[in-house]
Image 1 (cartoon, one colour):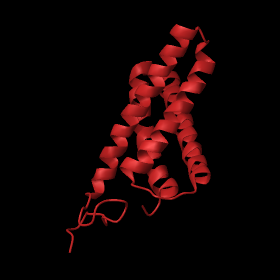
Image 2 (cartoon, helix red, strand yellow):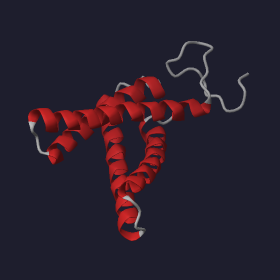
Image 3 (cartoon, one colour):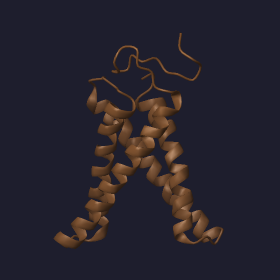
Length: 145
């Protein structure tokens, strides 16, 4: 019998191995850090090395960040073995884009209406979007995993 707060170990994990329920959230956070580094690093590279205007570069880099996040979350965070990649990635991408919209809206509200510094607003928005993303990805993209 497993203690309360532990998930069943059958999600691609070795027999007898259990992950604390909060373990998904921790892994999700680290995957977010990695995918953000890919996003920001690629944005910098495309702008500085290739001379691409920052808007299309940001779109490409954000898309690559989504792809990295999907792969790492699928296999490391949620240990998901579903083979319906297209449908699952589409759900993941829609939730990720909704997080971008949440992020931008919160930044705008805090900067324009509450007179926050844009970097402080970005930090608050990122935290809100993180929890929105985790909720959406764990409930819809990787539900029951």
